[in-house]
Image (cartoon, rainbow, N blue to C red; front, top):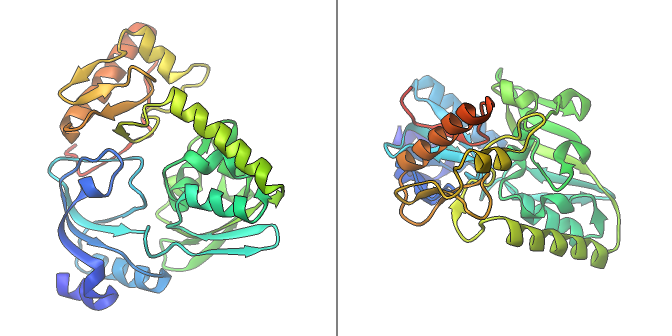
Amino acid sequence: MLENLQKLVGTEHVWADEPMKDHTTFRVGGPARYLVEPKDANELVKVIKACCEAELPYTIVGNGSNLLVSDEGYDGVIIHLFKNMSQIWIQGNFMILEAGVLLSRAANVACREGLAGLEFASGIPGTVGGAMVMNAGAYGGEMKDVVSSVKVLASDGRVREYTNEEMGFGYRQSRITGECSIVLEVELKLHPGKTEEIRARMDELREQRVKKQPLEYASAGSTFKRPEGYFAGKLIQDAGMRGFRIGDAQVSEKHCGFVINRGNATASEIGEVIEEVRKRVYEHSGVLLQTEVRFLGWQK
């Protein structure tokens, strides 16, 4: 399988027993059997076909910003859409992005080009592809507000294009969440703005993040989804879980909605903290928190 993957994408774009702690913002996770970085949609299709023929599981990963990989790792193929599939094109007020483009980079390019509307995404650590799956958002903005269309590789191997309406965007979800399709490319519709004003807004949001979020520690951003009618951080604080810690995994004292890695946490410790928080919050308020974090390689 290793030789097959190397033939498909090149030896320099395939790794065996690759530590996933190097590819997630939590900075934890055991080895993936293989990690592959296809450079375009054609190579992506070939890699998926090879995995299916070998009956080897695979999963798509961007920047790993909402991923908690087990300490045992992932016994399959990680298809890494980040470094290679990251082209950006500007066409008037439209920005076309490959799935592996970081949202922070997209926001900076939009600012440079005098295109407004993407400022909210400047501090989100994920990629454009992941942002489509989860309808990423922050500070009053969501991807659904700026998406014009999304090009995906469907489960039948065909490339399809969805309009904004067809994407079925909701709170931290889209039609991609429940499909086996893979985001390839996204078209955003922005509007003209003054670069200095766009930059000022991005700086303002950065200051708010620095003030309110534990950016000095490794994490996956907001660990829990916002329950309808509540704020996850407030529920966690009211349940007495601020600063709760197992090993180097901890509920942030700065923002209770974040579970952080203080330096040497294991994935198991982070998972235990998450489950204990969910248990205590449910006991205290009757609200069962759902995670934004995706678990990979965990035994059910």
